[in-house]
Amino acid sequence: MIDFFKKLLGGGKKITKTDIDSRFNKVGRVGQGTMSKVWKAIDYTTGRTVALKVLDKEKTEKLEARFKGLDRPSEGEIAMQLKHPNVVRTLEHGWTRDAEQFLVMEYIEGSGLSFHVLNQSKLLQKKRLEFAIQLGQAIEYFHRENWIHRDICPRNVMVDENNVVKLIDFGLVVPNTPDFRKPGNRTGTAQYMAPELVKRQPTDQRIDVYSFGITTYEMFTKNFPWKLKSSSFEAVVQAINSPPTPIQEHCPKIDAELAEVLMKAIAARPDDRWSSMTRLLEALRTVHARTATGLTTSKQRS
Image (cartoon, rainbow, N blue to C red; front, side):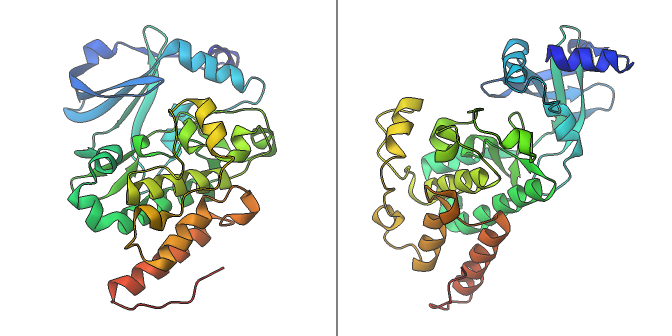
């Protein structure tokens, strides 16, 4: 973050700091990630209810240090560019008087996907495939805009009161360029990290395909594809060296073609996975169209 701050100063841009305690009425805490705090807040300047996200200064600085010399955009800069129905809208970003980055985002009335997964809610059981397609659309949009998300997991997804899925966190997003695909930068949520990322090998957008696959596996089963002794990074490293449990063992009634589609998404070797989120979405939509009309057979897309 210091490098980014200096870059702005060096570029002749004036940094305007905001007294967020005077501008916003923090109604209550609605979330806390590993690198930020989020409040439901009233913006006194507009009267609008928003989500106010403030990034932890020290943790953000450590993250920025991992990309030193690569000119990585800040989370706020990235978020302001994103315009998609399945991605939370960011209205503004800036700096607090304490030199913390903050984002003003649309406030989403709803529940976290992690809540639905943990409780296997009736809504999730009814709309799993629809929710998976919506999340896939958000990721496809990221990839089309030439980003890699790097942290797809239920914790970073909301389902609003109209059953619209929203991807909400962009703290680890990087450009899809050679410098950012190089091996070595191992960031993400351990249980959802692709093997090539864990093993510090070259990466590409297929790490998001993998994380999406783990997320949807969990949506259908409430389980990970392996028996993890803990959520530690070491436990995940041991697990990914073992074959994943077929999803049918946890969910015997799952459509056979859908099971095949989801298992292909979590293949250990990137070349064995879906080549793109677009291809994966095509397969999911084919299953959805068939199952919605009651058909029982369909030719699998490769």
